[in-house]
Length: 292
Ligand SMILES: Nc1ncnc2c1ncn2[C@@H]1O[C@H](COP(=O)(O)OP(=O)(O)OP(=O)(O)O)[C@@H](O)[C@H]1O
Ligand SMILES: [Mg+2]
Image (cartoon, rainbow, N blue to C red; front, side, top):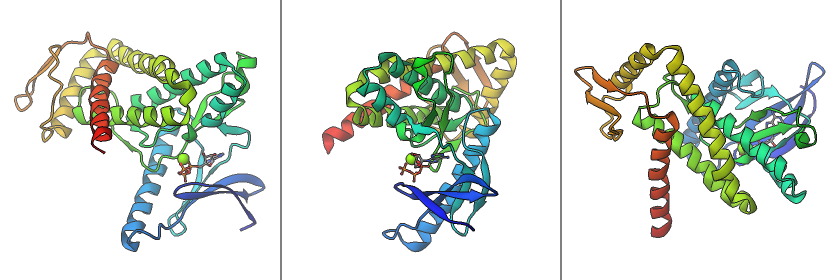
């Protein structure tokens, strides 16, 4: 193999640019964590690599922009993927807009970020490590030319998980995962972009809500009966042991799971369930902070 050029040293991996058939590509190589017991470390590394590969392929199939995977090698814990030479992280883009006092740029970036996360969740993909460093943007100066809004590229899926029942918005554990995903971003955003804290609530979460509710509205419109069936099916398949079915909202009453009886009213928005959970997660987070 030809020469490798190290471009980033992350918390758990090294990012190299390598030459592959005359083209620059990325090698993301996870390195051993010496402080972990060796066997456990190997297991975790393998699991994160598998999660990353799976999520990248899921996103690709769902039309969510991610690096194309060319190859993977479990011996060197490496994923070989598409390199975006002109991209910067969304973190850097926010910082640049902030320095330039470019309010439009900040809003548009926050808006795309919220929509991108909404799309991930709509497809049942929980990222697991949502920070502004884990999204890349090409041509970030789109505010100079509003017609060139660039999609974000989502990366770093080592902690991701996903659900097949992507349409399902009523399963407590899925809602919990989505809410925690948002909470992680919220905490990261507030500490990384302390000048822009209002953007999280007023732009990113708003865009997220619109993406999630729009998607749910479309599903309902296109096939309401199928949705009810799906809810019931997934509820029975994945949630029989879930004792914390605290979705006791008056509008959705699961009368008796075992009797397959469900009373379903479609008036609520998908995001309202996620945000109910988010409120709980925030509360838990605050308690933890106060305790120590
Ligand atoms: N496909 C890519 N094209 C261009 N740059 C990339 C690509 N993948 C990763 N990078 C760069 O490398 C950085 C680290 O990548 P990634 O987040 O996947 O690794 P990590 O080890 O999990 O990092 P961290 O611990 O910092 O989150 C990214 O923030 C980005 O700057
Ligand atoms: Mg990262």
